[in-house]
Image (cartoon, rainbow, N blue to C red):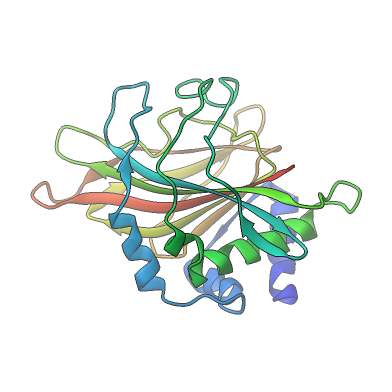
Length: 240
């Protein structure tokens, strides 16, 4: 896997971000133990409504889990609130948000662990030795953004933003009957650097949070008579 990570690390170092298409992402996570993808993706059907939306919306469902990634392995931490300052999240920041926890089955799932191991290998590689922590504080977010006629779904309701961490992975799980959802990356002067749309399962965006902003356009249903939603896994790594 090391030789596969090298070009990805180089791209992130050069641009501050990388868009990785599903076949390439599969090559990275499969050696780390990826298995039972369909079972993993199906767990997005069991997410609670995010009741902390300051815009009053009820279009976002989520579960939240916290892990420790160290040389000895990845372990789950006790459940805790998700907190962002209003500097990073002017819409929903400034409060402790107690989301429903990621289930134990999801936390132990081979797909989750493969994704976290791959992130750990990549982000260890990209962090200078003198700055590399003994252990990373890892947060995982299962997101479902729902949309219906007359109600757009907003993947990033806070707009263009940074997350206040070191590294971010956004990984597509499923798109069902939705249009748009374009990701755009901006430099620190908020000038656009690139844009792309995560469409296939495992399509991924990797972001150096210290160097770039990111945002995603709202989604709308293609067929108004059918359920429409966008499922992603967001993983953040921060030095403890």
